[in-house]
Image (cartoon, rainbow, N blue to C red; front, side, top):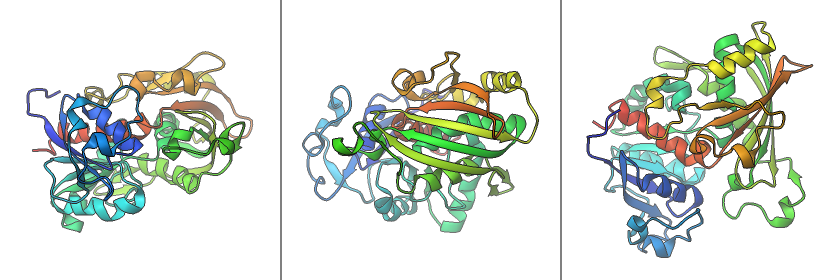
Amino acid sequence: METNQPKVKAAILGATGMVGQRFVQLLSNHPWFEISALTGSDRSAGRKYSDACYWRQEGNMPDAVRDMQVLPAVPPVNAGVVFSALPADIARDIEPEFARAGYIVCSNSSAYRYEEDIPVMIPEINAEHLALLDEQKKKRGWDGLIITSPNCTTSGAVFPLKVLNETFRIEKVFLVSMQAVSGAGYPGLPYLAIADNVVPLIEGEEKKLELEPRLLLGKMNGKERISAPMTISAQANRVAVSDGHTICLSVKLAKSASLEEVKAALISYAWPDEIKRLPSAPQQPLVYREEADRPQPRLDRNAGSGMAISIGRLRPCPILDFRLVAVVHNTLRGAASGSVLNAELLKAKGYFG
């Protein structure tokens, strides 16, 4: 895919936070994008990035951004694409300002995920939902656009659900998540709250897990997105794991299938070649583990450079039809890397002119 065009200048909103730092890390040597602007809170604006940001990612802060001045999170900025790592309550006001001003906003926030004209996107899953963008611009009068990424746990669950829904059609899903503390942002949970413990509540999470897969697996009817007609029941738990969300799925299929047929579908599903050619995309986005005790977050979260979903423990379910376990790297595929992949899809489709 295209390599000879000039790099697109990229701004990062909320660049000093954990997800913002992931964006800095991922974009510092990206073949299609280059960091041109970093924004932060009023406390950070006007300071050098190295002074405003306490670097908490592995390795060192990239030299190219150390002396960049942190800007207020308002347009204009010197960029063609804006990556948003803002909290939802702040993103709600700021992201539309950039879209109105003509910027392409690739958001990791939940602020606009559920709007009928804004795609919630994973390129391998629902690239056809880019058709919503024309309606978005027309309806809102924006010169730019907003495209969102799903919740980090949804990003892991939806890959096996995509295969099973396309092949056999899913009627019901029971989903239980065991989510890493990094999903709560830095510093996560207090030690005495999470050590030797499981916290069976993540505010707002279960509602997201019951809605977002249906949006991602929905079909386009002309210019309208129709949610997938399945029922999902979710329970979300925070566990003492640093990175990597584990998801237990039980599914009821509309079409009768044997265990061998379900396994074959999960292993051999033909993911779109167009997406595999994007720089951040894994060649095999769904990795089937044969071992009896896999996947595990510590062993499998970095599959495909953190962009592949590992699944295993496929077996019959005595209540529904089949059950399995999935692991996703929540701060890569489930956060910053997912938004970068969305931007790569937009560039490949010509949205950057």
